[in-house]
Image (tube, rainbow, N blue to C red):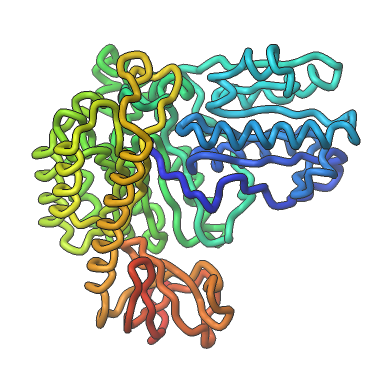
Length: 481
């Protein structure tokens, strides 16, 4: 759950990208967090060199891939229904091949390929470079599988195809895998141990994005604060590195500074942070550079120390409060968002009240809230009975959401009367006479179009708000243009 899952993006297909000379068509659907959507861009880049152009029409596809997530049961059920749909289309297009990518592929490889026989190819998140060979296998009529987790692979040498981009914002992956064995999470088992990309390859990708007209990037990883480059390899092996490697290692705060200095007018965000790994130097680096946005996604999962321990979250409630206090002290206008799981095994009413009181202390700007869903293969599934009745989970989740809506309104109201820089990302979803963008705190801002265009940085006076949106009037271009 250490990743933001945006419901409206689930099942998004890639936009058609044409390359002269390519004769086959690739269709990809993506589910889960932004890491999966980013991986789909890597897959499209690899297969573009193998003769595939992307298509948004399932019925035209020669190869259909679904990039999957194992975070929640709902995602797996949705993917299974989609696989049934793909197989129905296969009856009219017998040459069409179907493959499963990502976390669900790694977890359910034998079931999908051998027992249910609903796919031709199963590819784990570290095996995308093997796709050309796997495609040849299925073209020859054989099933193909590669779910080997790598100690080295970061895809740092592949320039992703920006498939679903607005041309203004982009995601840049900096780490893969995770070492934090939260008992509810499948990520360490489906994406492997943590390893970081070469900082130079990250800076080169950022420079390329700027040169292509992008105005904002988000550094992406399961746990960005744990970023550590010392020449390659797993983070857990850093203790065995040479003295030179240790002396020249680059941590996350140093990477942030490198990226901020490389392109001073480029907005920089990052996600996701883990409370146990976020250090003061990261917060201080954010405060030092104007182009690093004042926004931190800081999942807490629960406000109860007892539940945090059962989740193997390596921080306490008080330690989380101290981190929040430090952020507020150093960056007073920093927005903070959360992930919260309610109904974790053994959660009592007091544990639930502890979560609500923690929310009252922090007053998050927004959040991502879920009822606990047992994931096979996790420590929680092996160790605990999923003993909280559905109706109790539903009621507790409703109370958490209600409180978050009140806090979101409180936070947006604090912006009224201020003049804030907004990056225009597109047309408002409710009116084609208004632009939609975000301020530094990641809050959506809408305002009349006038003569501005997508990609402009505009100074906007905030006049009113809802719990999720700021409404304002454009005053002038910002100095970033």
